[in-house]
Image (cartoon, rainbow, N blue to C red; front, top):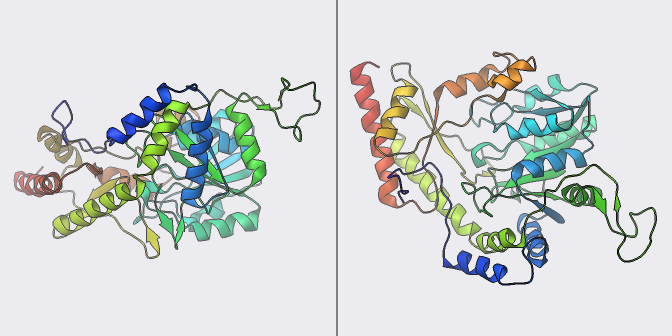
Length: 388
C-alpha cells in the first residue's frame, strides 16, 4: 500500500468501512468528549490484555506521565529505563522532576539488560520502566524479581507490544502498570491515544484522577460532600482526556487486533525466509517463550563494508520508507545539557550505528514484502561492489 507520495512507509494504520461507520455513529450520538464509549473501550481493552482495569488517555505520552505519577514518582526520584526508546519514556520522568537513569541493552533483543539493572538502583530509584522494543517483550520475569526484592514499581512501556505475550501471559497483565500507545503506526489506532492497564485499584483511581485535572468524585475519596454537583481536586492533574469519537474507533480497531498481529507475524516470517541468506545482515532475535507483536522489523548491518547511510538513502530513492529506531535518548541535545554524556551505554550505541527499520504493517501485500527484501539484497550487493 503505497501512500500519496509514492512511498511504501515503514508503518501505516489500517482503516476500513467498519471503523468509519463506528466513528460516524459516535459523531451522531449525544457524546463527543467523555461518554459511554470511553468506558466501553477501557473495559474491552482490560479484558483483552487480562488486566482488571484500563484507563485511556489522549496520547501514549500522557499515559506514561500518568503511570509515573500513580507510581509516586516525584522530584529527586529516579526512573530506570533504556536509551533505545522514543524520548517520551524518559521525558515523562522529567515532567515530574525525576531523573531518568539509562541502563544498557541486550545486544540480541535490544531490550533493557536485566543483569545491569541492579547496578543502576539507588536509594532514589522509584520505578523500573522497561520497553518492549519493536514488540518483543522484555525479560519481565527477571525484572519483576529485581523490583520485588528492592520494593520498586514496574511501569512497562508496551507502546510497541499490544498483542504480544510473555510466557503465555498477555502483555498488559504482568507489570504493575503497562502503557500502550494508539498512534497510527501502532497495532491499533485511535488517531492519537494511549492507555494504562493495571490490577491495582489504588493506581486505577490515581490514573483516572490525573487524567481529569486531579479531580475525584467518589464519596469514598472526597473529604466533604455538598451535593450531587460536588467534586474535589486532590492532585495537580492535567486534561489528558480522550474523546468518545476516538474510543469508538478504538473499539472497532480492537476487534481486528488478532488479525493485525497475525499479519505482522506472517510478514516477519517472510522477511526471515527472504533475507536469512545475507551474511552481512543480522535479523531480529526472538527469545523462547515470547510471542512478539512485531511493531517494527529491524535489520542490522554486520559489516563496515556497507554504509548504513548509503543503504538508507538508496532504499528511499526506490520508494521504500525505511527509518531508524532510535537515536539513544541521552544523545539528544536536551539530555546533553542535563549532563548525560555519550558512551554510557555501549551496546545501545553499537546497535544505533547499525540499525534500519524496514516496512511492516498489516496492509502490506506479499509482493510488497518481496519488493522490500529484493531491494535490500540488490542494494547491499551494489554497495559491496562499489566499496562504500
